[in-house]
Length: 305
Image: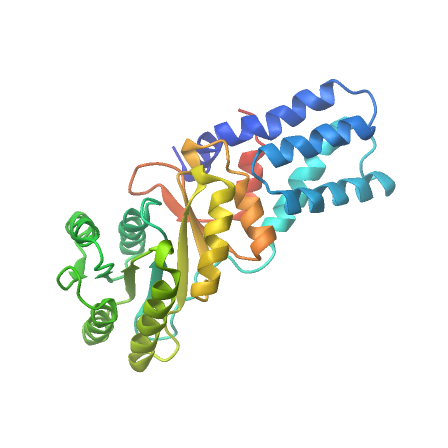
Protein backbone atom coordinates (compact mmCIF):
# COMPACT_ATOMS: atom_id res chain seq x y z
CA UNK A 1 0.00 0.00 0.00
CA UNK A 2 1.44 3.39 -1.03
CA UNK A 3 1.45 6.31 1.39
CA UNK A 4 -1.48 8.05 -0.33
CA UNK A 5 -3.59 4.90 0.13
CA UNK A 6 -2.49 4.75 3.78
CA UNK A 7 -3.44 8.42 4.16
CA UNK A 8 -6.81 7.82 2.53
CA UNK A 9 -7.43 4.81 4.79
CA UNK A 10 -6.15 6.69 7.85
CA UNK A 11 -8.54 9.56 7.22
CA UNK A 12 -11.57 7.25 7.02
CA UNK A 13 -13.03 8.36 10.39
CA UNK A 14 -12.43 12.05 9.61
CA UNK A 15 -13.93 11.59 6.15
CA UNK A 16 -17.05 10.16 7.79
CA UNK A 17 -17.40 13.30 9.94
CA UNK A 18 -16.81 15.76 7.09
CA UNK A 19 -17.18 14.63 3.49
CA UNK A 20 -19.63 11.79 3.94
CA UNK A 21 -21.89 14.05 6.00
CA UNK A 22 -21.61 16.79 3.38
CA UNK A 23 -22.61 14.27 0.70
CA UNK A 24 -25.64 13.18 2.74
CA UNK A 25 -26.50 16.80 3.41
CA UNK A 26 -26.55 17.93 -0.24
CA UNK A 27 -28.68 14.96 -1.28
CA UNK A 28 -31.42 16.29 1.02
CA UNK A 29 -31.60 19.71 -0.60
CA UNK A 30 -32.69 20.75 -4.08
CA UNK A 31 -31.42 24.30 -3.60
CA UNK A 32 -28.93 26.14 -1.39
CA UNK A 33 -30.69 27.94 1.45
CA UNK A 34 -29.84 29.22 4.94
CA UNK A 35 -30.83 25.91 6.55
CA UNK A 36 -28.38 23.97 4.37
CA UNK A 37 -25.59 26.46 5.14
CA UNK A 38 -26.29 26.23 8.88
CA UNK A 39 -26.02 22.43 8.72
CA UNK A 40 -22.80 22.66 6.70
CA UNK A 41 -21.33 25.00 9.31
CA UNK A 42 -22.25 22.55 12.07
CA UNK A 43 -20.56 19.66 10.21
CA UNK A 44 -17.29 21.60 9.94
CA UNK A 45 -17.31 22.62 13.61
CA UNK A 46 -18.09 19.06 14.78
CA UNK A 47 -15.13 17.79 12.71
CA UNK A 48 -12.74 19.91 14.82
CA UNK A 49 -11.97 22.27 11.97
CA UNK A 50 -12.36 25.03 14.57
CA UNK A 51 -14.83 27.89 14.89
CA UNK A 52 -12.61 30.59 13.34
CA UNK A 53 -11.59 28.37 10.43
CA UNK A 54 -15.20 27.32 9.87
CA UNK A 55 -16.17 31.01 9.74
CA UNK A 56 -13.51 31.59 7.06
CA UNK A 57 -14.67 28.61 5.00
CA UNK A 58 -18.34 29.59 5.29
CA UNK A 59 -17.47 33.15 4.19
CA UNK A 60 -15.76 31.64 1.12
CA UNK A 61 -18.85 29.51 0.43
CA UNK A 62 -21.16 32.55 0.61
CA UNK A 63 -18.86 34.51 -1.72
CA UNK A 64 -18.79 31.49 -4.06
CA UNK A 65 -22.60 31.49 -4.16
CA UNK A 66 -22.70 35.23 -4.97
CA UNK A 67 -20.10 34.82 -7.73
CA UNK A 68 -22.03 31.86 -9.18
CA UNK A 69 -19.08 29.51 -8.49
CA UNK A 70 -21.58 27.47 -6.46
CA UNK A 71 -24.94 27.00 -8.17
CA UNK A 72 -26.28 23.76 -6.68
CA UNK A 73 -25.75 21.81 -3.43
CA UNK A 74 -23.61 19.33 -5.42
CA UNK A 75 -21.10 22.13 -6.11
CA UNK A 76 -20.33 22.51 -2.41
CA UNK A 77 -18.05 19.49 -2.02
CA UNK A 78 -15.59 20.25 -4.87
CA UNK A 79 -15.63 23.94 -3.87
CA UNK A 80 -14.70 23.11 -0.25
CA UNK A 81 -12.02 20.65 -1.37
CA UNK A 82 -10.39 23.40 -3.46
CA UNK A 83 -10.62 25.98 -0.65
CA UNK A 84 -9.25 23.60 2.01
CA UNK A 85 -6.39 22.62 -0.31
CA UNK A 86 -5.58 26.32 -0.88
CA UNK A 87 -5.75 27.06 2.83
CA UNK A 88 -3.44 24.17 3.73
CA UNK A 89 -0.97 24.97 0.97
CA UNK A 90 -0.49 28.56 2.13
CA UNK A 91 3.16 28.93 3.25
CA UNK A 92 6.09 26.55 3.07
CA UNK A 93 5.65 23.06 4.49
CA UNK A 94 9.14 21.88 3.57
CA UNK A 95 11.65 21.17 6.33
CA UNK A 96 14.53 23.65 6.34
CA UNK A 97 17.91 22.02 5.72
CA UNK A 98 21.38 23.35 6.60
CA UNK A 99 23.52 24.52 3.69
CA UNK A 100 26.44 22.66 5.27
CA UNK A 101 27.06 20.75 8.48
CA UNK A 102 24.35 19.10 10.58
CA UNK A 103 20.68 20.02 10.14
CA UNK A 104 19.46 20.36 13.74
CA UNK A 105 15.81 19.52 14.45
CA UNK A 106 14.56 20.34 17.95
CA UNK A 107 11.45 18.27 18.78
CA UNK A 108 9.03 19.42 21.49
CA UNK A 109 5.61 18.36 22.77
CA UNK A 110 3.81 17.15 25.88
CA UNK A 111 4.26 13.61 27.16
CA UNK A 112 1.98 11.08 25.51
CA UNK A 113 1.63 12.68 22.07
CA UNK A 114 4.14 10.28 20.50
CA UNK A 115 7.14 12.63 20.58
CA UNK A 116 9.91 10.09 21.11
CA UNK A 117 8.32 7.65 18.64
CA UNK A 118 8.12 10.49 16.12
CA UNK A 119 11.86 11.13 16.53
CA UNK A 120 12.55 7.43 15.92
CA UNK A 121 10.41 7.49 12.78
CA UNK A 122 12.11 10.68 11.57
CA UNK A 123 15.47 8.97 12.06
CA UNK A 124 14.27 6.03 9.98
CA UNK A 125 12.96 8.36 7.26
CA UNK A 126 16.20 10.31 6.94
CA UNK A 127 18.32 7.15 6.98
CA UNK A 128 16.20 5.78 4.14
CA UNK A 129 17.11 8.99 2.27
CA UNK A 130 20.77 8.04 2.65
CA UNK A 131 21.51 10.59 5.38
CA UNK A 132 23.55 10.02 8.55
CA UNK A 133 21.50 10.65 11.69
CA UNK A 134 22.20 11.18 15.39
CA UNK A 135 19.74 11.39 18.30
CA UNK A 136 20.03 13.44 21.50
CA UNK A 137 18.11 12.40 24.63
CA UNK A 138 17.60 15.90 26.12
CA UNK A 139 14.33 14.90 27.83
CA UNK A 140 16.31 14.13 30.99
CA UNK A 141 13.25 14.67 33.20
CA UNK A 142 12.10 11.08 32.58
CA UNK A 143 14.35 8.04 32.54
CA UNK A 144 11.71 6.31 30.41
CA UNK A 145 12.14 8.91 27.66
CA UNK A 146 15.91 8.32 27.56
CA UNK A 147 15.43 4.53 27.48
CA UNK A 148 12.76 4.78 24.78
CA UNK A 149 15.07 6.86 22.59
CA UNK A 150 17.83 4.28 23.12
CA UNK A 151 15.44 1.59 21.85
CA UNK A 152 14.74 3.65 18.73
CA UNK A 153 18.48 4.17 18.31
CA UNK A 154 19.04 0.41 18.31
CA UNK A 155 16.05 -0.17 16.04
CA UNK A 156 17.25 2.32 13.43
CA UNK A 157 21.00 1.81 13.88
CA UNK A 158 21.41 5.40 15.09
CA UNK A 159 23.79 6.68 17.76
CA UNK A 160 22.13 8.30 20.80
CA UNK A 161 23.86 10.99 22.88
CA UNK A 162 22.60 10.73 26.45
CA UNK A 163 23.37 11.74 30.03
CA UNK A 164 21.86 10.46 33.25
CA UNK A 165 18.28 11.18 34.32
CA UNK A 166 17.99 14.63 35.91
CA UNK A 167 21.04 16.06 34.18
CA UNK A 168 21.05 19.40 32.35
CA UNK A 169 19.16 19.06 29.02
CA UNK A 170 21.23 21.88 27.50
CA UNK A 171 24.42 19.96 28.29
CA UNK A 172 23.07 16.95 26.36
CA UNK A 173 22.16 19.19 23.41
CA UNK A 174 25.62 20.81 23.47
CA UNK A 175 27.45 17.46 23.52
CA UNK A 176 25.21 16.18 20.72
CA UNK A 177 25.92 19.19 18.48
CA UNK A 178 29.68 18.86 19.10
CA UNK A 179 29.52 15.13 18.30
CA UNK A 180 27.38 15.67 15.19
CA UNK A 181 29.85 18.25 13.87
CA UNK A 182 32.85 16.05 14.63
CA UNK A 183 31.32 13.05 12.84
CA UNK A 184 29.92 15.02 9.86
CA UNK A 185 26.36 13.96 10.71
CA UNK A 186 23.66 15.15 8.30
CA UNK A 187 20.68 15.30 10.68
CA UNK A 188 20.64 15.74 14.47
CA UNK A 189 17.29 15.12 16.19
CA UNK A 190 17.03 16.50 19.74
CA UNK A 191 14.31 15.22 22.09
CA UNK A 192 13.14 17.66 24.80
CA UNK A 193 10.87 17.57 27.84
CA UNK A 194 7.33 18.91 27.49
CA UNK A 195 5.97 19.81 30.89
CA UNK A 196 3.20 22.34 30.34
CA UNK A 197 2.41 22.56 34.04
CA UNK A 198 5.77 24.32 34.48
CA UNK A 199 5.53 26.57 31.44
CA UNK A 200 8.02 29.17 32.68
CA UNK A 201 10.62 26.44 33.39
CA UNK A 202 9.97 24.95 29.95
CA UNK A 203 10.47 28.34 28.32
CA UNK A 204 13.79 28.91 30.10
CA UNK A 205 14.94 25.36 29.36
CA UNK A 206 14.23 25.73 25.63
CA UNK A 207 15.93 29.15 25.52
CA UNK A 208 19.02 27.64 27.16
CA UNK A 209 19.05 24.71 24.72
CA UNK A 210 18.80 27.16 21.81
CA UNK A 211 21.66 29.25 23.19
CA UNK A 212 24.09 26.35 23.58
CA UNK A 213 23.21 24.98 20.12
CA UNK A 214 23.78 28.39 18.55
CA UNK A 215 27.25 28.67 20.06
CA UNK A 216 28.27 25.85 17.76
CA UNK A 217 25.88 26.40 14.83
CA UNK A 218 24.57 30.02 14.80
CA UNK A 219 21.65 29.30 12.44
CA UNK A 220 20.45 26.24 14.41
CA UNK A 221 18.04 24.79 15.30
CA UNK A 222 16.96 24.78 11.68
CA UNK A 223 13.53 23.53 12.71
CA UNK A 224 11.66 23.47 16.01
CA UNK A 225 8.93 20.88 15.48
CA UNK A 226 5.92 20.62 17.79
CA UNK A 227 4.42 17.13 18.02
CA UNK A 228 0.64 17.09 18.51
CA UNK A 229 -1.80 14.20 18.90
CA UNK A 230 -4.63 14.50 16.34
CA UNK A 231 -6.98 12.48 18.57
CA UNK A 232 -7.11 15.40 21.04
CA UNK A 233 -8.80 17.66 18.47
CA UNK A 234 -9.15 21.26 19.61
CA UNK A 235 -6.92 20.54 22.63
CA UNK A 236 -4.06 20.16 20.14
CA UNK A 237 -4.63 23.78 19.05
CA UNK A 238 -4.62 24.87 22.71
CA UNK A 239 -1.29 23.08 23.26
CA UNK A 240 0.14 24.72 20.14
CA UNK A 241 -0.91 28.14 21.44
CA UNK A 242 0.93 27.53 24.73
CA UNK A 243 4.07 26.21 23.06
CA UNK A 244 4.26 29.15 20.65
CA UNK A 245 4.73 31.34 23.72
CA UNK A 246 7.61 29.14 24.92
CA UNK A 247 9.50 28.58 21.68
CA UNK A 248 9.70 29.82 18.07
CA UNK A 249 7.94 26.84 16.48
CA UNK A 250 8.59 26.40 12.77
CA UNK A 251 6.15 23.57 12.14
CA UNK A 252 3.90 20.83 13.48
CA UNK A 253 4.09 17.04 13.41
CA UNK A 254 0.57 15.63 13.71
CA UNK A 255 0.45 12.02 14.95
CA UNK A 256 -2.31 9.39 15.18
CA UNK A 257 -4.40 10.73 12.29
CA UNK A 258 -5.44 7.16 11.53
CA UNK A 259 -7.15 6.70 14.90
CA UNK A 260 -9.37 9.74 15.00
CA UNK A 261 -12.44 11.43 13.52
CA UNK A 262 -10.82 14.76 14.42
CA UNK A 263 -8.42 15.04 11.47
CA UNK A 264 -10.07 18.35 10.62
CA UNK A 265 -7.76 19.80 13.28
CA UNK A 266 -5.06 19.87 10.58
CA UNK A 267 -7.05 22.62 8.86
CA UNK A 268 -7.57 24.50 12.13
CA UNK A 269 -3.87 24.42 13.06
CA UNK A 270 -2.85 25.82 9.70
CA UNK A 271 -5.57 28.46 9.50
CA UNK A 272 -5.80 29.64 13.11
CA UNK A 273 -2.14 29.48 14.08
CA UNK A 274 -0.55 30.20 10.68
CA UNK A 275 1.68 27.26 11.52
CA UNK A 276 2.76 24.79 8.82
CA UNK A 277 1.95 21.12 9.32
CA UNK A 278 5.24 19.55 8.18
CA UNK A 279 4.80 15.85 8.99
CA UNK A 280 1.81 13.55 9.54
CA UNK A 281 1.55 10.08 11.05
CA UNK A 282 -1.09 7.66 9.83
CA UNK A 283 -0.14 4.38 11.49
CA UNK A 284 2.05 2.44 13.90
CA UNK A 285 4.64 1.38 11.32
CA UNK A 286 8.07 2.99 11.15
CA UNK A 287 7.30 4.18 7.59
CA UNK A 288 3.92 5.70 8.49
CA UNK A 289 5.31 9.17 9.20
CA UNK A 290 5.77 11.26 6.07
CA UNK A 291 6.12 14.89 4.98
CA UNK A 292 2.76 16.65 4.78
CA UNK A 293 1.52 17.44 1.27
CA UNK A 294 -1.52 19.75 1.37
CA UNK A 295 -2.94 18.70 -1.98
CA UNK A 296 -2.68 14.99 -1.10
CA UNK A 297 -4.35 15.56 2.28
CA UNK A 298 -7.31 17.42 0.73
CA UNK A 299 -7.59 14.82 -2.03
CA UNK A 300 -7.58 11.94 0.49
CA UNK A 301 -10.06 13.76 2.74
CA UNK A 302 -12.57 14.16 -0.10
CA UNK A 303 -11.84 10.83 -1.82
CA UNK A 304 -14.45 8.13 -2.32
CA UNK A 305 -14.03 5.35 0.26
